[in-house]
Image 1 (cartoon, rainbow, N blue to C red):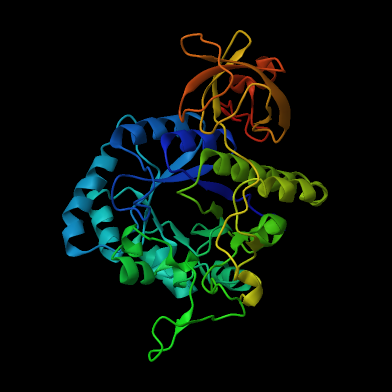
Image 2: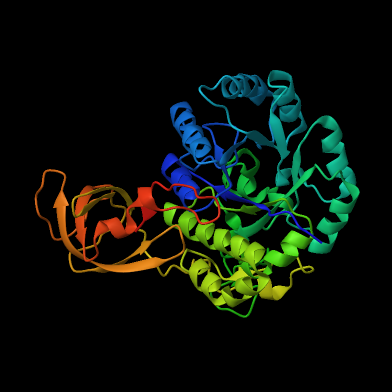
Length: 423
């Protein structure tokens, strides 16, 4: 049986991250505007940035989906109507689809922009084929599966819906403790509504039990004198299960992380890109490269990995009870934005010094170890370190910059010209 190659869908919190996702192998990116998305604390996109981002993505053959997946209140609706009209009239090009969970928002989108492709967010709790058919009959093109579904259930949905209807599923990233992400804890504890984009992530906090007649006496929920992180799930990672995802009939493999850095996005996009392409080129090549995928995916921040609900209901082994910290073994330094003579221009994100050994991540999957030999400010002053966030620097590396000149890099599968490289 011949299977369709799935789309690789990557999150982008900013214009810089969008460009990184495009360069490192995304087929599509999903972004939020300044309202109506579920990541209020992300940088998100101004109208001008969205115009530039859409144009950049389309120039490289990549689609852009815009989130508008809050659970709306009455006072949101007129603003949503205006927002959808702005997206509809965006010049020179419009986004490719809207991601929506609320039926009212869906109806407004279809009224204001009848031609727009609508994807139904996981927030809509899409757990069965009748729900998929409901949205299909209303005009939705794609439905994002609830994270609580197994691969067997997703395959069953695929068998019951039209072939041209698309299934999108999360395959990597943070797992929410609440059903399909519809959480009330944040609103209850802090007054910040997770269903309107302001989640404070109380699932990552430490908890203990207090008996009502013993105020101030904390009883650990688990055998740990410091309390326990009873809601703290491991992160989802399906890099070892691309064949099963493909065989289940999933059309789009979605990465979670619209709050993540360019380094995270570059690492995850590049690794899943190579895994998908390797599998479709030769399943044995995919198996042969498995250690590389696992090593690379571990370079970005994560909380240990799980396969979530895909192979059955999670048990106690999918939780992290003793801490809420990420594993973080690599530091993001910046992106090579230009190459001139023997120097590379970057806007640095973390401190590094002359003499440091660093690594260049290339979109084709190779990593280039180099040494920082010299560093100069924009004014040409020689400096020994880069202590100031977002300082623009010209750096000399131990390898000629032409070896990783970004404009010459090409994505192996699409012959896509790249435009940036993460350090």
